[in-house]
Length: 106
Image 1 (tube, helix red, strand yellow):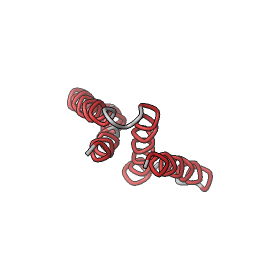
Image 2 (image 1 turned 120 degrees about the horizontal axis):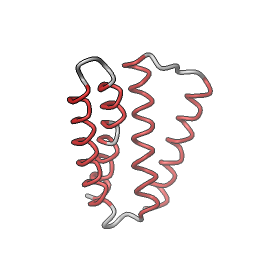
Image 3 (image 1 turned 90 degrees about the vertical axis):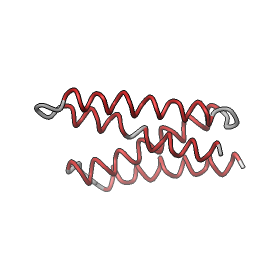
């Protein structure tokens, strides 16, 4: 169950950079900041639950890796961020590191 909590926490971790980006649009500051607060609160609560059985270093690295990779992908899809070879290679290195951590935990 802890790994499910951790994956959900990582997915919710994407809400705060997206909320910050959304809040920069005229008239969306308060709704965007509300998304930041709600998303991060839920993400941190799930991370807290996951850390009951998953080592802190593994949990934190997986949490941030999911958030970073997902935010990168959403930035490309929603905001037209560049998907250069170097940026995609960096993303693949992050994903690879998260996979190694997961596989080494058992």
